[in-house]
Image (cartoon, rainbow, N blue to C red; front, top):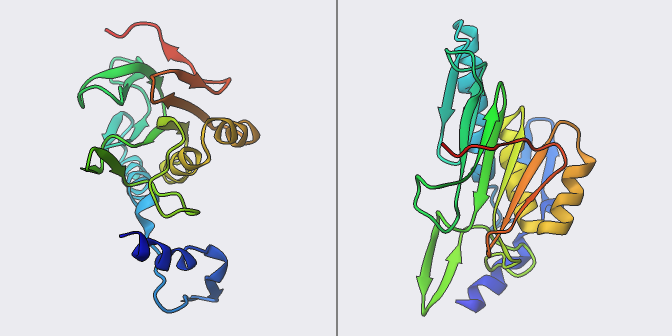
Length: 198
């Protein structure tokens, strides 16, 4: 209901969060949801644990969050597919070669519902309270920390293609792939894509 969304909007304001020592205080009715970084944090912790156990080759997939340890046992890079936002779950639109890196994707095609012919996905615009509508279907971030990539993929999706790409270009050791609703693919300068989809 629009009235409920409008009533909730004043509670979308990180500047109202107060941190003193180990105590976090929020205004009544406000809460913190760590869903935007939780899988990334877990992926980083799992990878760190495996490395501590002596694992030198692994590919962890937490559904939208992929982290690689070293190379494949045969010495080649891990081939990681970026899902086609309009395709089936196992249909890649491009393939990345990763070694000791993570790729995290946020998009409008996994978590949504349809009502009266309108798709409502889970990435919300903090200004309107409604799902972001900026022409993007997905944003994938490639970097070292899966939690960092998790936060950036959502933030860049909300920012949109131009502002999101500008942010990525300011950051070190971070690359991005933006896919629009009409399946145009935009890469930050350092992205290397595998030429072969096989």
